Image 1 (cartoon, rainbow, N blue to C red):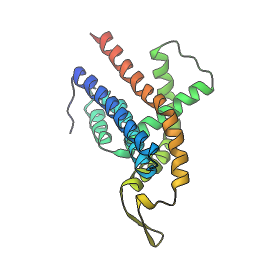
Image 2 (tube, rainbow, N blue to C red; image 1 turned 120 degrees about the horizontal axis):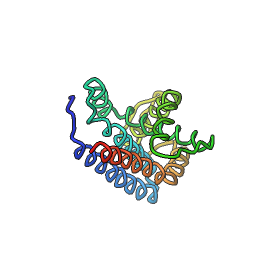
Image 3 (spheres, rainbow, N blue to C red; image 1 turned 90 degrees about the vertical axis):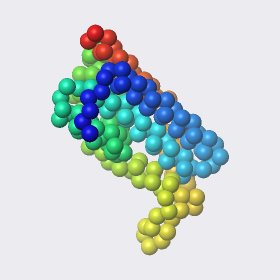
Length: 192
C-alpha cells in the first residue's frame, strides 16, 4: 500500500490511535489491579504500539512515494511501531538529561532528528523484548523443553515490576503522542 492521506485523515488517524492507546492502557490497568499481569503486559505493549502509530501516521501525507511506502510497511510492523515510540522517548530523556532547552517546535524536531539514529539500535532491542512480553501474555508457548502458559507464568515478579513502571509512566508516553499530533496540526496550519 502506498496511499497518500489527506491532512484531515492523518489528524483523524492520530487521534484514533491516541484514543485506542488510552483504552488499551485502561484495560491493562484493570487487569493489573486484578493481578492478571501477563495479559496486562500484553495490553500495555499494544498501547505503546498505538502511540508509535502516531509518529508513522504523521508521514502518510508526505509527497515522497518511497518514504510513504516504508511508513506503510512500518504501520503493520509491531516492533516497528514500538521502535518509533521507544527511540523518541530515549531522545526526549536525553534532551531532558542534558538540559537542552528548545525554544520551539522546530528546535525539538531538529534535536529528535539528530538523536533518532543514535538511539535507534537500543530501541530495536527494547522493541523486540516488549513484543516477546506481549506474546507471552496471549499464547501458550514451548521453550526450554516445556510448555508455558500466560496464566502460569513463572515470571510474575519481573512482569509485575515492568508493569509498575509502565503504568506509572504511561501518561508521559501518551503525552508524547499528543505533542506529536499537536506538532503535526501546527505544521498543517502553517501550510494552509
